[in-house]
Length: 151
Image (cartoon, rainbow, N blue to C red; front, side, top):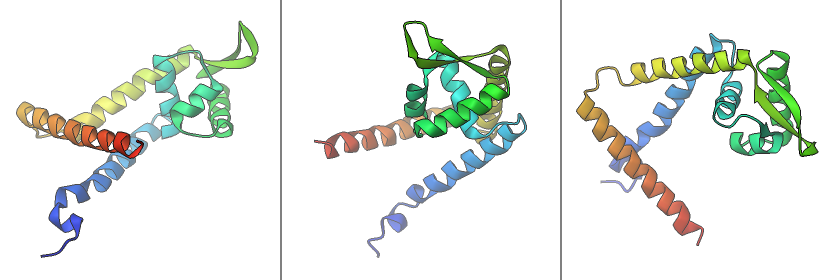
């Protein structure tokens, strides 16, 4: 008997593999729309909060402001977003979805719907409920651990 946590809990070993497989599958599917995951994330964030500032976008995407500017500029050149000055503070630039960006958001939603149907193929409704319950418990345990470690 070993004290290796991976041997004691083989389910725990699967998380990095599943996470990587999801990311790789999503990337391949998004490439068909001419996007990489950073661009898709930007469009999805704007679809929920159009008119965000550059700094807020950088924080939400967990990237540097310079990297956010690069992604925004590329998406603007492709006609998916536009930058406008904040009407109350000219120093702040806000990013808005254009019509082409909204169409792409719909394609992204369809892509992730397809990905989910692939991921959960063969699962019963009951199994999906159990999976969601277990994943929620894991998430809650990790969040509690983060909170406790920050005290």
